[in-house]
Image 1 (cartoon, rainbow, N blue to C red):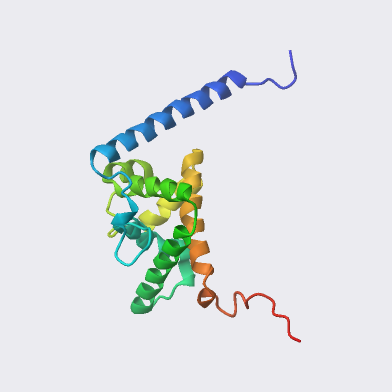
Image 2 (image 1 turned 45 degrees about the vertical axis):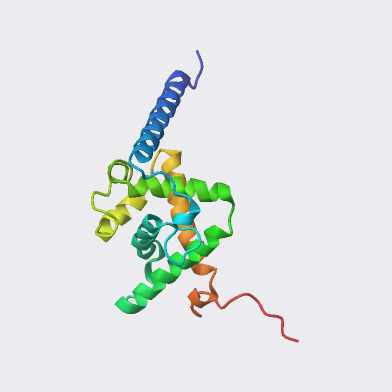
Length: 187
């Protein structure tokens, strides 16, 4: 008899259940998206004036950018719309310069989030992204961030880091009080 009993069979069983559940969920979502025509489209079907993002990707990023970027974007409606558009364009440019592997993985993520049944089941967002409340979008991000499923946590990281990196890579997004810029050598 050991001092610290190990519950390995339960851990192994839980791991196997998670694997089977995740595989079934992803296979079902992939099948549904393929049958309904929502599977990843070729790059020729991008949103107007963008290099890589499709219209449905733009809808999701436009909905989530204000939540992810928070106070970094203006509150005045016209300036806010311009800032969100800039964030989406920067994201498109950033993705365009990344690997094709990343393109495919993100296209699959956006496919799952744009299709109503999978958006509801996986994200818990009942309304289309355009009309979803800020609280529903925040709750979706919190749920994925804190999920026990690694795939959800990875999806959360992809969305939030992608928007943040794309926003802050542009020096015009820096405010003097938050970041004075890189060090400059003066002779």
